[in-house]
Picture: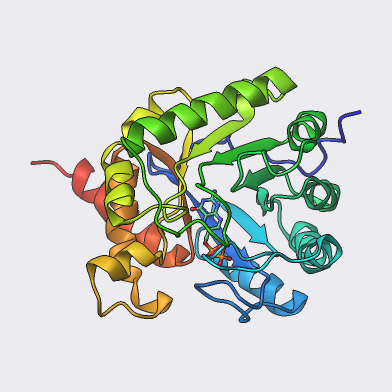
Length: 286
Ligand code: HH2
């Protein structure tokens, strides 16, 4: 039985604001996320952060209770549920914004949907559990299928590709087919190249250059470049995740111009502002 669609604002169905990509604000309810670990671990702090991101212009929130940074240790399912569900409930009780749950685990996704989420963002493209595809179909939620090489503990151990853009595009097409074969509606599927997930700098750059190849598959594309390690590889002074705003905005603007329909970001206000300025320049009379 599909759960009730109550409180489910559609993301794919909602209109773009001013032609810019949607902005998905990241809420990490974790002690160890690479970008902001520990800052929003308690439900009150995480909820306050989520409401702040909404006020700053987020179109969607992505709430997660397990870090996927390189080398991260897995979290027990019950602990992951205990981290995210109170935050989803608290946000949902105060605001109708679409909420995505960032998890690999079908039972966490189920608990999140029951609490008011409407999208399942899975860095394993619904491949972590043999139940993932059928649970996604049964819940009738939107899904993000992301490419990752290996798992977070091992993914940066010398990743290699013959043609990264072709391989990632082929993988995402294959997972979208698998999701549809399991009963996930075509219009509920988003694709994500998984920047930084089992990729070196040259791979990340090739994927950004080739983003339109993924968009050409006909599904909306989500792109996560915010505060990622590739910014530091390009600019060695960007040691801390918080030092990477400039690089994150540059990559977000590139992505928005090359097929990304949504950007997953930590710095919502700055990203919305960057797209407003870009939009104003593009719309100006010459
Ligand atoms: N990146 C991260 C986590 N989830 N999901 C999608 N779809 N795309 C991404 O690029 C992506 C993602 C990593 O960022 P963050 O959540 O800040 O870090 P951590 O995994 O350490 O919590």
